[in-house]
Length: 481
Image (cartoon, rainbow, N blue to C red; front, side, top):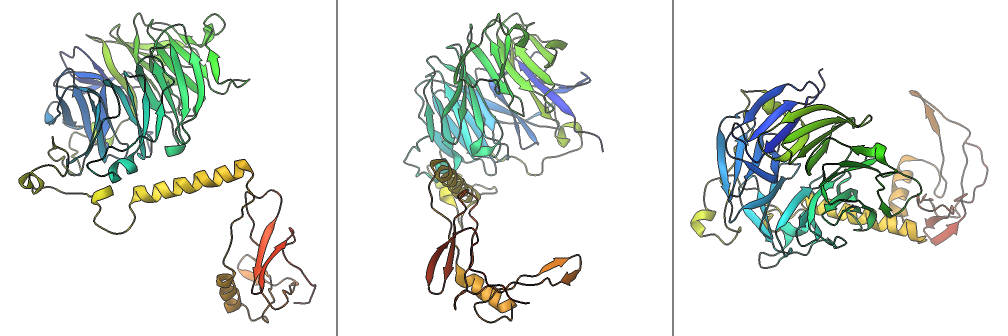
């Protein structure tokens, strides 16, 4: 079976021939591009592996292509103002767009506008999702980066504006770019700013992990898949490679150009606007206002290929080519609906009764059972509480219902009450070893191993109450099986 093909999607501000050009990453061969309009910065996104979205530069709409129909726009999503940034959830269920200082959230299945978030004070510059689509991040010219829980946004009342999970306010100048690593709510996120710093954060706790100061403003940032390196594009055309595992560990670090000259990619003549790393971590793609896209070998810092464009490069990123992109006869599994311009629940009854498939989530969920996002949120909160107990040395222990084990064990074993027998099996023929009879003085007791209890304490509970025991777990009397 052939390996998946990696392709580079690139757009520029001129776009006289095509809006988005496509070329195979390793061979450099050009593939048919997508025609119609020009896409603005941070405004190009893949939707569910079946559609391509492009925010029209300086206009109030989003262009939509089917991946296999590169020469024809399928539709336009009308927005209340020029779109400054755009992204789609990895699961293909939601679209986010930045319009002025507001974030617009659409549901793809029915085109409903689910939320309008107004927590920034100036125009948005970038948006991104976590890899599991449970959270999204927003950055703006107000120097703030916000972390949003998608489940909380969907559950909020229409009259309320949900609060972001975290507010990162350590930057002193506008946010220019951001990216999120792998791990869902436990991922790390990087932000870049005109204040000449790039910062690394932990999404779950909101803690600042690393701040790197450079000599120039940073316009683009990305992480490799292993998250060993952070790549930062400067206003002077330089690309800096920051080692995240360098020793000694320092939260505040200064990138010294003279000392770390071997970690700089040099070739662009103007500011770097976008960065992306290949899946194997060996290649770096960069776009610049010097109207070129360059492909670099990360190990040697050499430029392997240069693609010339007719205008400043606004978007450039590497993706695994979806099947529909390479198959001209392919079709989307579900056609896109007409996207609403009004917040869901505020339209007239005629608009709400329009035809289409409706998937109700969050507040509009029809069934009484928990949604996927609700279950994920509960699981995440349990993980956080368990980790906090472990780190703080809390001696709380998990408990177990002995009565259930009593019924299970006594139902399978014919031994007298208060006695447990162990036997081992090898292969398909059970072989009974000399067994131990464990007397519990009229009550069956069981021990539970707590993986976070390194002191070796366990709890045994019987019919007569709770007994705290040492690692031996039970009082044992030798007997014959």
